[in-house]
Image (tube, rainbow, N blue to C red; front, side):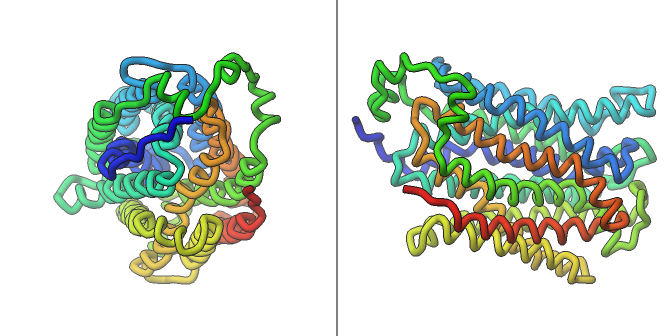
Length: 439
C-alpha cells in the first residue's frame, strides 16, 4: 500500500477553509432561527417542533450524500461537487428566510410556513456541504496528520461561528435597526443573512479550487483498495450490521452531546431573556427581548471563540495525554458551563459559562471524527461518515420532539432550567467517553 503524502499546513488549511463560511451560516441560523420564527408568529412551545426540520433533513440527506460521494469521480474531485452544490443552495435559502414577510405578502400562517421551509432548505443544503467535508479530511490526510486536520477544521468552524453569531450585534452597533414591527424581521438580522450567505459561497470556492483531490488510481493505492474490494457490494443494512464497535460506543457520547446542544440552540434566547432581562413568556417583539437576542448572539460568538482557541491547543493536549482524556475533560467543562448559566444574575458573567461550552464544542466537532477515521474502511468512508452523522441528528430530533413538553410540564415554562438539564446530560456524556474501547 502506497503511503499518502504529508500535506503542508496551508494545504490542510485550504482543505477545510470552506467550513469557515458554512459555519458562518450555521451560526447565524443557530443564534437567530428562534428569533426569526418568533417574529413570524411561532410560540414558545412550538419552537422545538419547527427546529425539527433541520435534523430531519440531516437524517435523510447525510447517508445519501455520503454514499453518493463515495462513488463520484469528476474533474472537480470526489467530494467537491457536493460541497459546492450545497453551498449555492444554502446561500439562496439564507437570502430568502428572513425575507419571508416580503416574499409571502399575504401574511399570517403562510409567512411562518415559508420561513420554516426556508429553514429546512437551508439546513438540508448545509448538510449536503458538511458531510463531504468530514470525509474529505480523512481522504486527504495520512493518519499521523488527522488530529491536526480535524483540529484545523474545528478552528475554522469556530472562527466562522464567532463572526456569524456576533454579526447582528455588530451591525446594530454600526447603526442598523435592530427592531421590527410585529410579523417582520429586524434589518440587522436580514443583512447578517445576506453577508453570511455571500461569505459561505466565497469560502467554499477557495476549498474547491485550492484542493486537488486524489485521482481514483492514487486513492486506491493509498488505501490498499483491491479489485475484490471494489466489486464487493454492501447494502445499507449490511453496513449498519458491520459498523465498527467504536462507532456504536461513540453514538452514546453523541446522544449526550447533541441533545443538550439542540436544547441550547432552541431555548437560549428565551432562557436568557427571561432569566436576565425578566421578559414575560411569549414576548418576542419588545426592545428587551431583541436586546437579549443580540446578547445571545454575542454569547454564541464567545463560545465559538473559546472553541477556536481550544482547537489550536487540542493536538498538544492529545500528544500529552490521549484523545479520550481530552474528549471527556472537554464535555465536563461543557456540562459545568451549561449549569452555571442558572447561577449568575449578571449577563456579563455568561461569558464565563461560554468558556466551558466552547471547550466542549471544539471537542465535539473534532474528537469523534478523529477517533472514527482510524477504524473506517477508506472505500466506504463517505457512507460511514454519513451514517455516523445520524448520531448527530437523531438526538436533535428526540430533543425537538420532547423539548417543548419538558419545558412546559417539568419547568413551568422557565427556559433557563432547560440549560441546566443540558449541562447534566453533557456530564453524562463525559462519563460515557470512558467506555470507548479502541484496539
